[in-house]
Amino acid sequence: MGSVVQLKQSINNSYTELLKSVEDKLTLVDEKISSKLSSRVELIQKMTGYHLDTGGKKLRALLTLSSSKLCGYAKGGRDINLAACVELIHAATLMHDDVIDNASVRRNKKTLNTIWGNKSSILVGDYLLSRCFEMMVEDGSLEILKLLSSTSAEIAQGEVLQLQHHGETDMLEETYLKIISLKTAALFSASTKVGGILADKDNKHKEALEFYGKNLGLTFQIADDALDYNSELKLFGKKIGNDFFEGKVTLPIILLYQRSSYEEKKYLKKIFEKPNRDEMEFKNILSSIKEYKIINECYKKAEYFINLASNSLSIFEESKEKQILKNLTSFSIQRNF
Image (tube, rainbow, N blue to C red):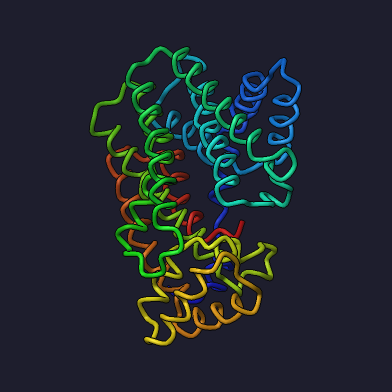
C-alpha cells in the first residue's frame, strides 16, 4: 500500500467534488437544521447554536443528497429533509459520545458538556433525536421511518457494546468490527439507502447503496482510528492520541496487542486498565506501533472494505454521481481531517 505519507500525497479531491455536486441543496439542509433546532428554551437555543457554529464535514447529509441524485430523485425536497435528519442523528450521537468519553474538545472547540455540563448535553442530544423523529414522520414513508429508527437503535447498541469492552486490549477484531458497524457504518448505510428509497428503486439498487454505505463507513472509521495513532500525519494539523487518553481500544491497539511479546502485552494491559494515561506512555505506544508497522496494516485491512464499497456501485449506470461516490472510497482512507 505504501507509506502513510504517500497516501497523504495522493489524496484526490473527491470530497470537494461531492460537496460541489450538491452544494445548492446542502445550503437548504443547513437552513432546515437551523429551523428544526430552534427552541423557546434559552439553554437549548444557546447549545444548538454553539453546535452549529462548530461546523463539520456533513458527510452523511452529503451521502443522502448524492445517492438521491444518483438514483434520479427529482420530485421535491424530501432529500433535503432527510439529509438534515441523518445529520441531526449524527449530531445527537456526538453529544452523547462526548459525555461518555468525557471529551473536552471536538473540532478544535470546547465540547458542549465541558461548557454546560453532562446533564444538559444528554438532554439536548435527546432533543435532537426527538426532532429527527418528527422529520421522519413528516416525510410520510414507513420504509424510511423503519430504516432510520432502527439505525438509531443500532447506534445505541454499538455505544453500549463499546462500553462493555472498554479497556480490553485483547479484544477480538470481530468484536471491534461489530462495534464500528453499529456505531458508524449503520448511519452511513442508512444515509445512502435513503436515496434509493426516495427514487423508488428496486431492492437490488437499494441493497447496493446500503452495502456501499456500510463498507464506506467501516473504511472511514478504521482510517479515523488509525489516524489517531499516526505520528507522521501530526505535521498536517490533526491532534493525535484522543482515543489513547480516553482508554478506548481501537484497531491499532488490537493489532499491536496481537503482535506484541508477552512482556509487551502485560505493559499494554496495565496501561489500559489505569483510569488515566500519560504522555510518556503514549510515546512508548507510538514507538511500538511504528516498530510493528501497525498503521499500514490498518490501512491494508481498510482496503478490503474500500473494494467492497466501490464494487457495489457496479449495478448503477455510469454517471458523474457514480464516479464521485466511487472516488469517495479513496477519500475515506486517505483523509487527514
